[in-house]
Length: 478
Image 1 (cartoon, rainbow, N blue to C red):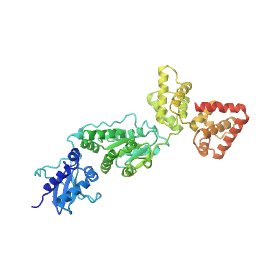
Image 2: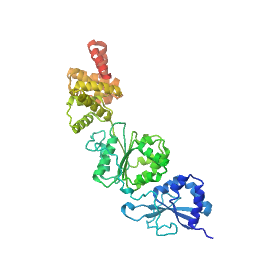
Image 3: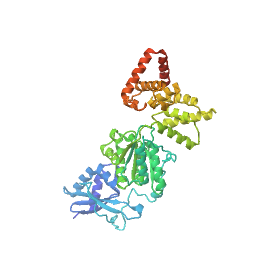
Image 4: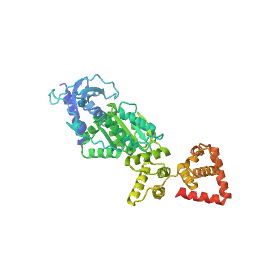
């Protein structure tokens, strides 16, 4: 008696059920429907591309052995994959992919009725499609104030900001998919990710946008495994139109989470959905990630956000103060910008501390108050001494404007201040001589060397000058 596809698959399921745990069987095998058996080829229908890829990755060896046991050595398996278009009110379609070639060209899509319990009027239920789930309001978790209007553009972030704007104007349709943003902490990548999501919602209210941290994603996945509802987890993320994942580096070393994310990434990318990912390192520098995931991070654009220059730091504070309706004198703003150079988040935190101190103690916001607060704040946060900060301290000490150091004037007091600033920049920063010269009036490295020798000679021969240098060194190190 010739075997039917139903009988063969039923026997296969009995073997498979004995070799995997109950929940895996219920999740990944119960939804499968056998379609036909022709020429030793069993065709089974699965609910989605993601479902097919998961089977191929995790259970294909078991499936192949089982098929060959039931059909013979010539037994083969083909998948019929439902391409779900229910959101567009279209009927499901299927494509066929042989197990021997994941990259097989899709056959022409056709409507495929499926026999379930011998009733051809029914279609296979998709376990990832929960009736009415599309209507559930997904909380985007976006912070309204982290928008493009409040994102200060500078040379340090122009590429990332421009790419983010392009993505927000046309999500999923640009070459920047995924958009991979990376930088050290506190330089604005989280702000930019939120800004992209907010702009997408402004432009396309119907799109589902979700921002979350990698740690939230991992926690949700762990909960889904614990509660045996991975299907709901997977389907939820398949619904998203624009997915923004922050601090992806925390997925390093988490193999199972990476595996799920890999398949979700593929699904969203293939569907033309937009992915925005942030990290504290570039894809080339990341550790603990599978090569296949790192290669996908490089599919679109990887853009870094660098440490903002002085002008950008001043503009960031001016924007913040303007939004809060607060007025502070320029000298206080400049002092903050000179004092905190490597982290925008710390810069804004210091500004908030000064405002709080002024309000609680009913003190005017003066340069003296700023110095008191910054001395404490910077000391507690291990400030990295910068060329800008050194120049500010030196110029304040001698009572000259900072811009004079950058000028071509040959006035004795200006030249001396410039040389002292170069001297301290050489011994207190990691900057090269050329970099120091560039930031001290666009001088060359030879000029910086000459300045350092001059200062050393004066320290050895002029007690008054040595007193100046000692006082300045204490001010800079405090």
